[in-house]
Image (cartoon, rainbow, N blue to C red; front, top):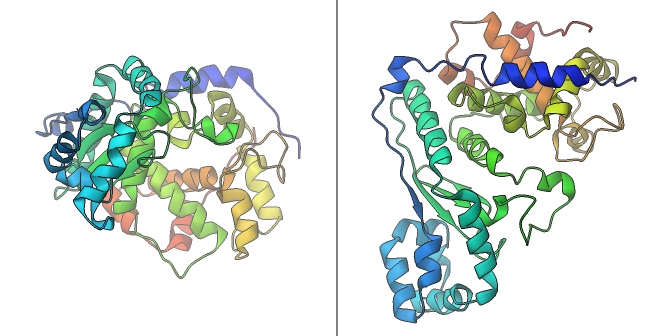
Length: 333
């Protein structure tokens, strides 16, 4: 299959993504939600004694329990004793300082989250935003890159310092591309979408995996309408322009190879899981093309069914219904 590239499309696509559908309705903008981002790395790394570390844990009970998994330790003193050597480790100062320099007061992230939470509240009136915290994890020694629950959202900032960081996560280059500041909030909202995205666990076909992830991407775009698609799906703008330009060829591959109702997990993972590329289609094709294609199917379905709400879409687990009613068939370019 000939996978053509179109540099001009990058300019067109990136410009369009930043403007199309970015209007914020008054009924959303006026929802009374205020987000505060609490920087917990500061008091944590200022602790110099067991007493100060215990005070830190007592002052942040939700964070201590959910992120640091306090209840997994035999006693609070055991947790204190394990954390204090990390908090006083001078070698972590570099991560702390570089994160502070890279993120500043995080006003950009605060505004992104506040708007996303307002949109979610608009679609789900019972939604209550989680508390938002930041932390320096020591690149995994203290916690994850992202933690999202109904009540708590934590950014492991040292993962997202970016290419200029002295220390970076131990991961393949194509995974490191995801650890950039501008992708941090979209990634968190993508995780948050799991709370609303109902799944049919008995349907394990390629199509079900494609559309389930497509629903998640669609959710993020709906609540972060000003965010470029490239940051949501974590493709470069060039990659995104290329897959749009080759959409009909990508779709033809799935049809010709009878992949939609494939149940072999190994085959499914080739198109759904993290990979640097999808050589089955073309050596230059990015990974996760099945999830991107699922997003296009869901978009088409919603365009054809304008009365379907976001709540109804996320609750729908009949993937064949979404596919059939989308009548998805990309035009040749």
